[in-house]
Every structure is written in C-alpha cells, then in structure tokens.
Image (cartoon, rainbow, N blue to C red):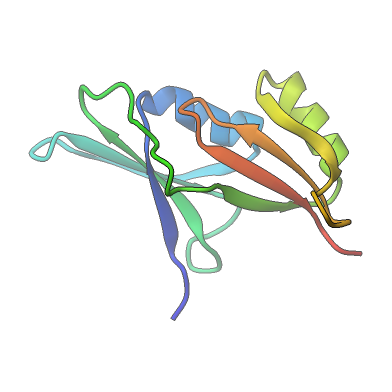
Length: 128
C-alpha cells in the first residue's frame, strides 16, 4: 500500500491551481469536470502520481468557501532551504504565516504558509 493523494475542497479552482503551481512550483497533473455531479477535480504535485503522493483539489460548483474545522492540521513539504522557500512564496504573492526558524522545543527548521482557502502548508528543512 501507499498514499495516493490528499483531497482538499477549494472555493475557487483557478485561484488554487495558480497557488499550487505558480507559488509552490507544483505541476497540474490532470483535471476533470463531472457535470452530472457538479464538481471538478484537479490533481497537483511535484511528480508523476505513479511515483508519489499528490494533492486533489476538489471544486464543488457554486461553493465558494468551507469551514476548515479543527481536525485538519496541515500538508508538509520537504524543502532544501526553508528560508529561501519563504522568500520565494512572498515574492510570488503567497502568504507566510510562520516565518522560517527552529520548531518549538526542537531544532528542525520549519515554516508555515497558507493557501488561498486557509489550508496550512508546512515547509520542513531537508536533512543534509
């Protein structure tokens, strides 16, 4: 078994695709409209779905926002340089909500950014 994808519901599919592709550097892997169900699925990631997990962006037609609740935490991404990744996100119009630095009670360097729907994405410094 392996993890295939994580699904999140988004209120504006074009805005979300722009964030994940332009701001975070992912690729739009596939997109499919389902007119009978009134929803669209778009899959984004850093590589082929056969090789790694991706994110499924689900847009339910006519729904512009969701209550995120308190059960979901975040999506984590390994990055080579957390400080530079935060600067790149800011320069591309993204929102850094926790600046790069050591985690609370630890030494691993992390940061958090927020996607257009309020989902948190954690950057974790890759180990050398």
